[in-house]
Amino acid sequence: MNSLKIKMTTRYECTLSPELLEKAVTELHEPRDNAERLKAIDELKNSYNAEKYGPLIRDDDGFILRFLRAKKFNQKKALTVLQNYHSVKKEFHQIFDKVHNPAVLEPLINSHVILTFQGQAKDGAAIMWYRPGMLDREIDIYDLMAYSVLTIEKMLESEACQINGLASVEDLEHFSISMLFKISPIALARMNSIWQDAMPLRFKAVHILNEGKVYDIILALFKPFLKQKIIDRIHTHGSKINSLHEFVDQAVLPPELGGTGPDGESTGKWWIEKLTEDWTKDTAL
Image (tube, rainbow, N blue to C red; front, top):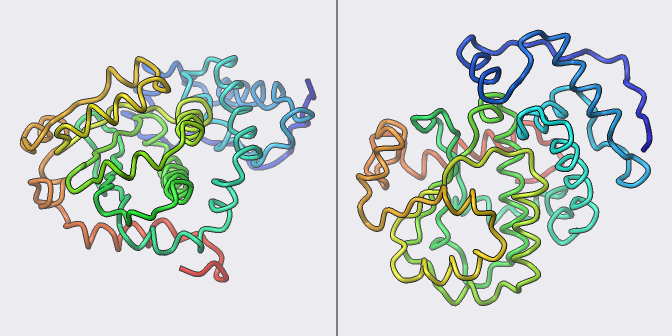
């Protein structure tokens, strides 16, 4: 393996709240001492095989730290995800060409099919809201995948999300099952390899609403590609939106989900502003 030279750049300094730090230490085995944390970061950087996977897309401490947190500071597991991350970026050009040119996703982004809430679940997890029933039936599945990657990457900029993890609320109302059969097994395998094997992500829960009979078909399609721990974290609520309130305070949820928080339109405007805040001026949206 290539040994990367650690650049003399500004090093990570811990600014976590006492509560978040305690959770990182107790649940993720993150070193409390920053010198030890930096040592773990440097070890992962030096283990990365640049000859095989290409140069690191980013080598700043904050980026590398995401992978360590995602795998509870297990160096071997973190290295696998870091290298998988770089591998999929090269292999799945149908997705990542669009991730790198988000202007092509403008209609999808403006549709508000994927949003995030401004608050968190009761366990602290960040929440992604997915409404596939709003999709155009002619949607390109790789467009949708690219937008979901953009969303996750943005959410992972938050250290709270890295530590507390992410949950999704997926409302299947008005979802057409015919859309599923347009997804090839190859596309399904690619999608799941990205989520489960290549993103520095702690997936805490999936909450399914209004699933009806379509859920059995969806699970049958996806189950062969899903790890058991993900399947175990799926909660189905049917039309009983109130059961979602056991996991997420009503103040966080929009009225569409029985909450008192900002509605979907307001949430959409907020999310697009946040998603695009660091984009260059020549990136249209």
